[in-house]
Length: 232
Image 1 (cartoon, rainbow, N blue to C red):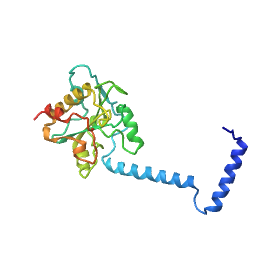
Image 2 (cartoon, rainbow, N blue to C red; image 1 turned 30 degrees about the horizontal axis):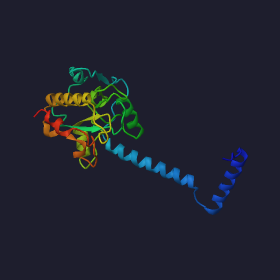
Image 3 (cartoon, rainbow, N blue to C red; image 1 turned 90 degrees about the horizontal axis):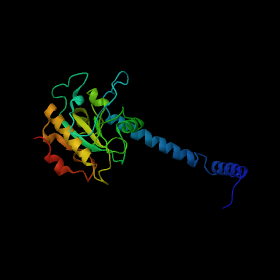
Image 4 (cartoon, rainbow, N blue to C red; image 1 turned 135 degrees about the horizontal axis):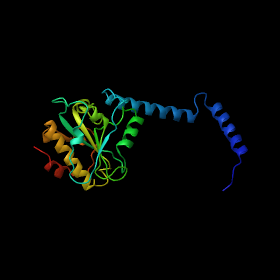
């Protein structure tokens, strides 16, 4: 391998720049690539911002998300320990998702969602898989604490589901590997409690793939056994 000196690199860079300017009176290749990237990011961010049509949860003076320990069938009373009462009929369904990533937590997903233009974590609950958050750990997001609409469902009826349903995300890639028993146990427990408290029938507990062009919560999600454990 021949080492190239700094002077040679500068000389070649200058020569390439002159050549590019002579052959192309418009933008250089790097400028075109950069402009395309910025345009793509802007379009994607704009679409997701439109999906997140609800007002952002307040950023000041809001409680930090609560964490419910995974060990044992502990009560979910803290999930309903809210500053304001839940309006009757406010929530009409539940949508189950996966993060499509092998690891993560409520906090990391919150940062990712903000980075792409959402007003914070789009889900109301996140259930950890032991890689980034404890296995079966339930992250109660500010959207739930504030009783704010979600930003979790795509598709033709996405707006309705984001406004009227509770979004629950399992950390993991359900297309590649199974979710942990602790995750599924926590999911069933959480969904059952939401059904009971909010009077949501099993028919209104939906998988994201039933509503949009996605495989979420993954092809390996145990849909049949999950539905067997739902309340009527």
